[in-house]
Figure 1 (cartoon, rainbow, N blue to C red):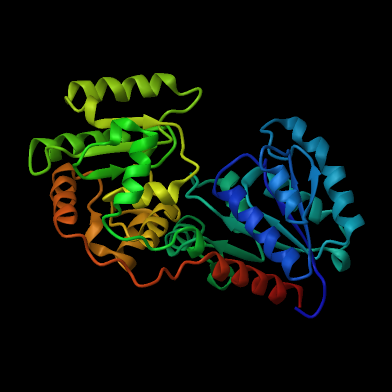
Figure 2 (figure 1 turned 60 degrees about the vertical axis):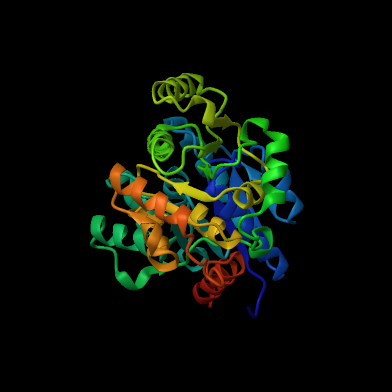
Length: 372
């Protein structure tokens, strides 16, 4: 870019998740390219990581779903005027509404350009429609682009830009398959996973949307059939505040007689090592995902992925490993496909095209396009 830009990103908080991760990744790219990155949010546990990038943070609770959130409008408007923002990039619905209101009150000649990113397949309606209001609307997958055009047909297609989320291949290097060293390290940390049978991995938060029940039924089918020693690890299923759901899963595992072969843990900080230790990675979200980062991460490590053929997960599998795509919620096909992938793992893609660097560069190019 020929001049230094000031880009303001708006989101509810810096807790954890795909929106927050993308915000940090773009802040890193902006600062590295010599631009100014400002993030407006309520703060959170990722705030130190954001500040370490060289980005600035302004604490405003612009994601609180209450009429009182409007009291932050004057401060947001003053911030945009004071800092001479060139771009305002909204990543969530309520912050986007406040951002639009703030921009509308600024003189047209000094008004920053307006970008939104549709990170998820939110329930359609007037409240969600604000995410299709950007001068450019970033869609994190073709699935999201199709969703926006379906539910907001008045959106000019030329405003939509597909910029897929990306992974850093250096963080998910190709590993041999099988990887006895990785399996031994995981077994040392979790002795319950010290068996000799194939290890299935389903990473995901402790919510019924992530398909834990489907995974337990799959494990029971595999153990009753071709893989009696199969095991299942679910990092993330054990989560503070979701104990009742975990009790349900443990009861289901006992009913299916697989309780000794499944392990529910808190999220692991070494997810790449978990992929390497596994033989098959599951992505069974019952609600279609916007992108499906797990698919790209696992395939980068070199592990086959089994998932429902819908949403972003289905899109990625169709492109990168079609053998792992199963019609949504077909339990019989899921078990048959899992057995086939375990018996003869398909060759992983030579490279994953969805890289962090490509996502960062495409976003910076979009900023340059709008800022002139």
